Length: 294
Image 1 (cartoon, rainbow, N blue to C red):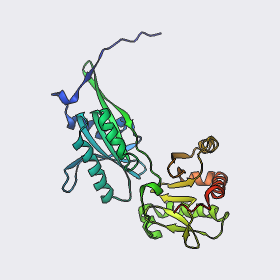
Image 2 (cartoon, one colour; image 1 turned 60 degrees about the vertical axis):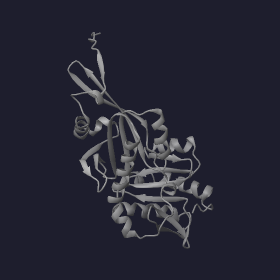
Image 3 (cartoon, rainbow, N blue to C red; image 1 turned 30 degrees about the vertical axis):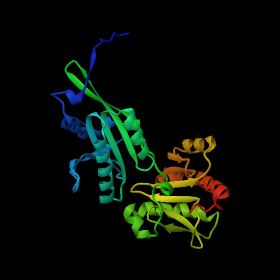
């Protein structure tokens, strides 16, 4: 076995450093967003001007062109203004580009217990993440490490956007694509095997179901740019979790508040799992179909 040479590491407090400042951190993240550990993200813009509200440190976008991340960096400890800024920038970007999902990301060297409790008040209402940053120096080199101390909550569309407003198919073809709205048509074919009178009902924040004009949302859909988000009203169980896992279907979350599975489906997912989707739709319809959620 080869002996490894021990090298002493030194923790650097960036706020107190003369060599490394916030712009240096900003540049490192923008050069390689993967260091945040948030997936395959693309750098979009630094110092993005916010009308009447300063500049957003970094805007990142996921490779599927569905989600944007509003990044706010602070050296040292989190404070009130830092939290307010990231929420304000998130809100402005969400209004500026409503066709994307948006996540506010707070980065700080020290996220104290007090402010973590404050942040948690927003989590569940606003998709908000908190990352604690640490700079480590080894000899003449320095690395940045990011630890997720608060993850976003992927809200159910029935929790996050109320009340629902009627819209039309063209609205969703613009917000998603014609192809992903077509995924809803394919899933409706399965729904109609349970009740041929069910039709798609286009709302501002989701595509639901209607029976003779009345909401009947035991399942609902949210077309995105590359896939469709399915909301399936079912009691959570290990059996269902295992079936979804074996089918390699991505569970975004189980929402205990609304009693719904949030599942991301691609075209391939739908084609390869028609029997499973029908089985779960049938189970949902039998358990909750008569309980009109709207």
